[in-house]
Length: 77
Image (cartoon, rainbow, N blue to C red; front, side):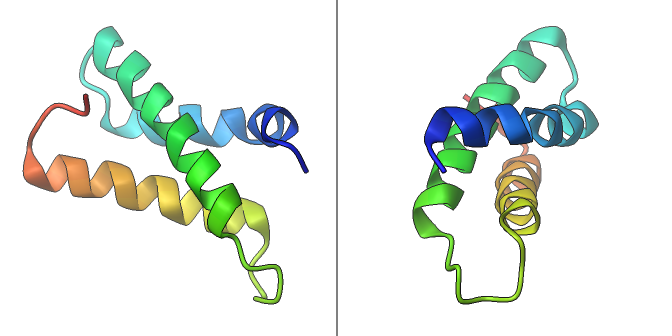
């Protein structure tokens, strides 16, 4: 699976998770961009021998990014 196909298949997940944490439109845009980067990292580190689907793994990676940023209470930039 290439990066563009992965993005197309998972952009809804990124939007859904980002919308939980974004406070403003600008936050939403920034968080969606960070979500795409997290998605690429998930693609690079996904282990196909594990039982989790890629979607589940990517969801977890993106959530961890957003929750760690929220815990720091710093802008996601």
